[in-house]
Amino acid sequence: MNLTISTATWKYDKDWVYSITYDEALSELHRFVIPVHLELGIPGHLEAVAGHIGKVRALGESSYNGLHHMGPAEMREMIAIGWGVGCHSWSHGMVMDDPDLELRRAKEVLGEATGVPVTLFTAPGSNANLMPPVLEKIVEYGYLAGLGITDDLNYSDADDLVWTNRVPIHESYGGYFESAFEPYKRIRQAQERRGWIVDYCHCPLEEAVHECKDVTAAHHRERLETIAREGGAACWYANPDDVIDYRYMRRHTRVEPDGLGVFILRLESLPQEVKSRDLTFLLQTPATVSVTQALVDGSPVPTIPSRAGVQSFTLPVHDGMKITVKQGMPK
Ligand SMILES: [Zn+2]
Image 1 (cartoon, helix red, strand yellow):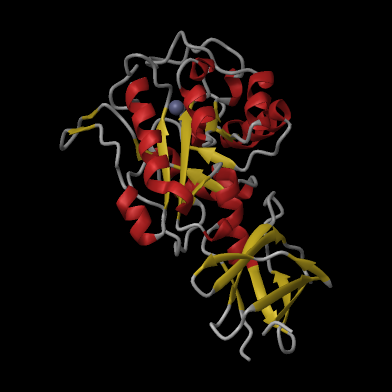
Image 2 (cartoon, rainbow, N blue to C red; image 1 turned 90 degrees about the vertical axis):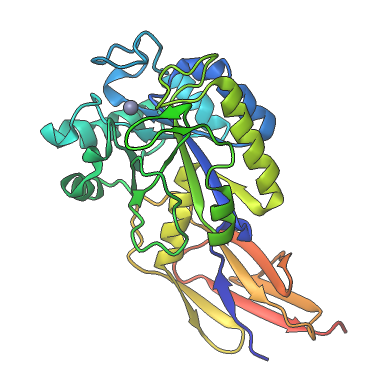
């Protein structure tokens, strides 16, 4: 019998992935945003300006001036319920003016404030803060990914794991063409291409603070309810930190056959910053087989039916881990 295992495109062998980020990590998210997340069971992600933790926003001409940046305790509270925190620079200026402060020190200070290593950089202002010199610096400083604002899906077969697209959800978008709020934005594409949507907004309130950068609280709720309804059990509603870790794990894990139904896992050049070492494995189960058993380092692990003819299991991987697969008819 041809026993093989493979790694699933996404964790738990879900079809597509949904995440949402909130730039500036404002306390006012408690008013409308966080309750909707709790109601629907979808985690979010805060993009915090490291030099302004816990301060009233007063940054240049920002539309959000007067609102409040979350402090360490508030961010830790969100992390405890499954949210993540990314670094949105130190000052929200041009990061190459002082990359050591804006990228390296900011990451360190935010890690200390939240108690969790920060591995995701969110470009402030525009994609100008995610151009090649910045991309090189963030990798040098131990970030695993950089989030820009490019209205596109993130594709499951992407070569580049660092550059991450985000989909603006907004009331009205000016520029070459006008556009308006659309609750189904990129969902069908994500389903078809098995992609990852990362939504981008700031702090939805009764009215959008800035119509290009935000939606109203009513539209925000509509977007998340649409995602949950369309995604059902086929979508992985994820903290982006976990998705980025999963992509690195999948890219850097090699499955080496070591005899009939025996496989050794090798972690090759995995960046040490990857926190979650989980991978989902798929076992092809032909119709003639009615019993599938997986042993990891000698101990049985439960497998679950994932799709037709496929069983899966999810667990943290280490270098040299041995997976044994046994299949057959019931005795
Ligand atoms: Zn910002």
